[in-house]
Image (cartoon, rainbow, N blue to C red; front, side, top):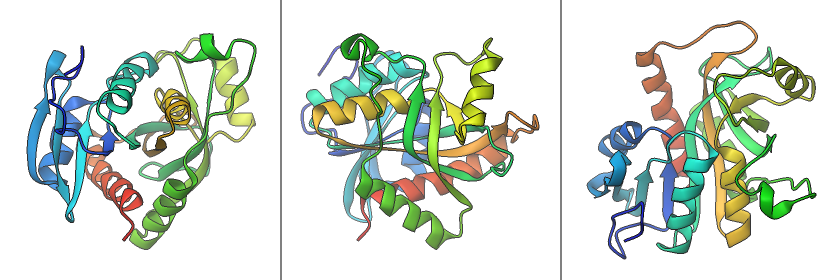
Length: 235
């Protein structure tokens, strides 16, 4: 056990999918894993371990924002031996050609700051995805017929952004979408020798103001879970 995860040693798989919402973790476990068992519920952050096509998988919530994700990713890697961590979540589109329900697979993640900023100090470190996971996810999405975009995400510190100039510059420089976790996940994975990837479904659009209703988000979320699982276990 750790301060934030109540699982016993051996209850967390080496491959962990991390949605922000703990209830989405439960939904994904119920719909995609065989024999899923609750392994954590400390502070309401749910984690489940089961199997997918015979492969052992944990689906564990990360909470909202990089500070929350940092807590869980650190403990999953350092204390439970997680080696592959894939964020599955939503993002807001920043480019006109990126539509609602499209899948964004993050090659890199830009941020104004992360919990790792104090370590890097004056260095502008460029966190990026694991190549094998990225390649596998793109192949999986294309095989499923999902409309997919590969490129950069912007991991924001805030949900209610009062810096429209940052959004303007991210859009100007080709960032595909905005979310709140990927950059620190990539930082931590690279630091600890783990593999990481972020696969996000576009749930709203910053340019058009469009947004998916809740039912549609759940359907798209399922497609994203399958892409993530296939990326982790391409065989």
